[in-house]
Image: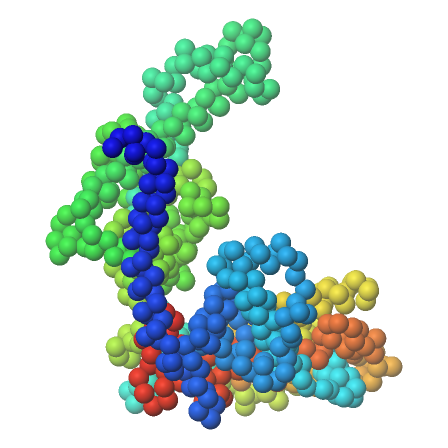
Length: 637
């Protein structure tokens, strides 16, 4: 028997191994075949006038969308894909428009093709089909963005309107109430209700009473000076240990030769003290972290945050007790404890004493300030990047100055509508005072203009407690390129700036120049100023023109302020500038106009969003009028 087994051992092992492999794989294969048989013939989606998308076609769409997702491609004008359904509708629209090229025209080398296929777990042909569809979708987005055609006259007029500059001096006279007085409860309630759901500064005239994210905080700071002093007094800082350090580092070019002097040089002493301080700082940090972590041991976590028990306030470590413990363990000066018991918005976190200006340097490559850390709190809708949570101590942070710091949010109040007008009574009263003063200020327009024309802008600024802003150029599209640059240098920089702003989602109204002292950007004010300068003669110096042509007032309704203007110079857009901005591959002027008419990058992306595409193509997942298909093999939408 053993002789038989030895003689046919290879055959037995091969046959037995094959049987085991079949037994191992058969259940999965059978399950997969049964699953596919169950889905075969099902309706995955309906589109158009009842066109049906079957299981096999849908699996192809899912595969393509996964390839595009693996490539990490964000389609200009479309953005990231929401789902396989989104990809299907994009490719369908491109196919119907005849914009998808044949796969034979896709320029890609074999190595790249097989790498993509291997990473995506797809066949090379499927990768080519996905790339062809990608090109079709890109063409579709570009066609939509640049379908408009602009006449030469319109482009020249646009260049004049948008790129011409006016140099002006200004005095801004805001409607700041000197004495709010008192307003009726009805007026207060009406103003409050109109803007209670708008954040401060985002409503008309900057109105807005929605409360921002707010917090209260306590902290413990261990200054680097106290760590250094403790290191200096430690036994490790003896002359003997300093000389050992010197000998270990005798090759350091900053240290003198050991045989050159009997006295330990300052360079060696300072370097050794710095090393001891770093070691002690690390030990203090570890001990502090351990003591803060002990009360949390055994507690569950959910989405990166600790699930706190009901008795947590009694269980957590008191920071003042922690300070005493650290002092005793490391023989340092008592760490500084502080607290802020009044509400502070996350935007104003930098105003908190002691810790507001800190820069944390041990949380990655980028320094973090208190605002960034507090804004990432769980209670403010964060995803747990820095694990900040009310009632739970932060990590032990090291600042750029070498201090160690721990803080804890003692209370939080996420952004919300005020419960009543009483919570924002001061702000509402102030805004009603602004409205009243604005009406009175507008009635003084003629008087202020006359005062400035007869006595200069300085006289008007003194009377209305304002300042004369020095002369600066303004335009409807402000690229920020210095005027002293020659055209050959300036124009490419201008074009680059415009493209960057368009890509960031800005429209023409967002690119307008700003005027110092105006809190809200006001394109209407700049437009009025440029319009008034358009008719000025180019062959006559501005200073020689009638004073009423040079000095005038433009009301900024958005800011509820009068802008007293004195024109000092004008620079119309040249034909050469218009030509440079309308020709070539970039065609900056046409791009600006097209993006503006289409609502900017956000408006363009919305056209190709899943919701808009589904509406245009009458798309439904699953059979029309029936339940959606099981999504175990395909993603939702």
